[in-house]
Structures are given as C-alpha cells and as structure tokens.
Image (cartoon, rainbow over all chains, first blue to last red; front, side, top):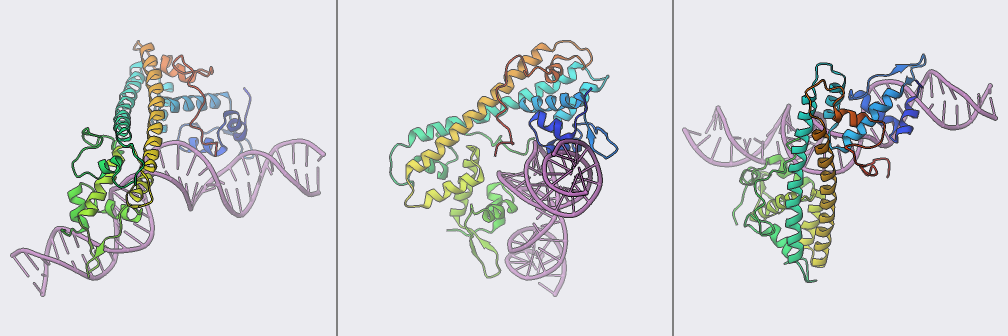
Length: 152
Length: 152
DNA sequence: GTACACCCCGTACCAGGGTACGGGGTCAAG
DNA sequence: CTTGACCCCGTACCCTGGTACGGGGTGTAC
C-alpha cells in the first residue's frame, strides 16, 4: 500500500488539496494517518473513496447523501434495500427536475417563436407575457410554483 | 393608483417583506417613493414588476438575468432581437441541464434494476459500481467530467 | 545550508436567493 | 395615551460546494 501526501492524492485525482481537506471536514473522507511532522498520509483506500464521491456526484447526489452512502457501504447492518431506497428517491427527484425544466423549455420555446420582428424590445411578446397581469406565461398555465428551492 | 406599504405589497404577492427589500437592494425593484415617516410607498407598477420577476424565475432565469430583462423592458434602444437572444441562450442552457439529468436518471435506473436481493449493502451492485476502479458507472461512460471547477 | 515546493491550521470568502435579528420609530384603534 | 402591529435600517446568518489567504513548519535537492 503506497502512501500519498494530500497533494499527491489531490493531483492524482484532479481536485485541489483544499477539496480533500474539505471532504475530510465534512466527514466524507476519514482522517488519515499522520507522519511525525503532521503531514497526512493516504493509502489507496482514500483514492477509492474520492472516486466514489466523484461518481456519486455525477449521479446527482449531494455531499450529504454521499456521506450516507459511504456509511452504508461500511455498515454491516445496512441492506441493499436501503441503498435502493436512496437511489429510487434520487430518481424521483431527478424526474421532477426534468419535468420542471421541460416546462420551462417549452414555455420559452413558444415565446421565442411568438417573437419575430426586430422592433423595439417594448412590445416584444416575451416581455409582454412576463408583464401580463393574467397569470399565464407562454399561453399555458405554469401550475403551482413547484420549482421551489425550499425543497433540497 | 393605490399606494401600498411594503407589507401590503408583500402579502398581496405571497412573499416576505424582506424579499421585497432584498429585490430592491439587488436593483430589481426601483426605490419607491417614501412617506414623510420614511415608509416605502408602492404603486401597481411595483406589483407588476414583482409578477414579472416571479414569472421569469419560473422560466429559470436568475435574478441577475431578470435584472437585465427588466432593463430591456425600459430601454428604448433595446430590440426584440436582444430579448430573443437571452431567451434562446436560456433554452440552450435548460436543454443542457435536461441532458445531464437524463444521463443521471438512466444510470441510476440501470443500477437499481441491477440490484435485486435483500442482502447486506456491501456487495450491492449500486455501491459496487461507485467503488469500481474502472471509470464507468451504470455500464455507460458518463463522459468527460464537465462540471469541473478547476477550469477558470 | 539554503532555496523552494510542499504541508499544517484556522478563517474568510465566492455565488444564489433569500431569512432572521435587534434596536428603534410610526400608525391606528380603543 | 397606550398598546400592538407595522415599518425603518444595517448586519449577520442559512445552505451548498468548494476556493483563497496568511503565517508558520517541513522535506529534499543542489
């Protein structure tokens, strides 16, 4: 098992030293062994955890969830059903985001299609739609404001 | 033209007083007239701007972009092409987000499909995929890591 | 033996979109 | 005239995922 300093592990991984320390503070990465001088000493397992984190991030998990997943990985009493539960919840979450984004895209597409001319911006159908006291945008009800950020 | 206090305008709109003041600080909402006491006095135009902001938010614009759109609305030299440009850029943006989310959803869907049993979490195909030193998740290349912060 | 790169730590800062707090003034009813 | 709800202001804080800074110790090659 080779030993790496924080800088080596970071460079191997394409992240900054500060990021590794940050993950450590967040409890994602275990505190590594230290040399007499206080230098961190990482093994291959730390690299594996970093890879796990990167992939889980690519799948849309937050660092908090990733911490949970890393815990499951080591917890002998955790079941595969636990993992599937988290993955399914994430899928539901992603689907909702996709629906929201599709609504936005469609509304914007309709609006840009409605705005041809080269006249002054005032009077442009896009801005008019945003101004309209009638509660619709793009000719279609946007529904309740579901895309709230209040729903991590 | 009725005159509203900040609290009235906020309640009518379903946002907090602090939010209205926040939009003002951000330059989205013009500074309103004041009573002798210093109380803000809003007219219907402020309500219209708030509505504009809410709708533009629903379409995925950031407050910064919304500020720009509000500016175009009043700028006599702005053209409809300017507005369309921003809308189109937003559409491109949204499409990219949708693609990313679809990739995530598909990868997660494949992984959950691969994880049947009720055994211990260790050995679960989902966690295994995240652990695998081979650089793939869900049986498909996730492509270059585009969300790198190490670029600028 | 001295450069120079690297590491330590704590703390502050970035964006985005607000929310909360605290000490004080104001407005309308009773 | 007092009570309670409202408003003023500035500032600090929330979350997420880091990035940057500064003052100091260390590791190693020349």
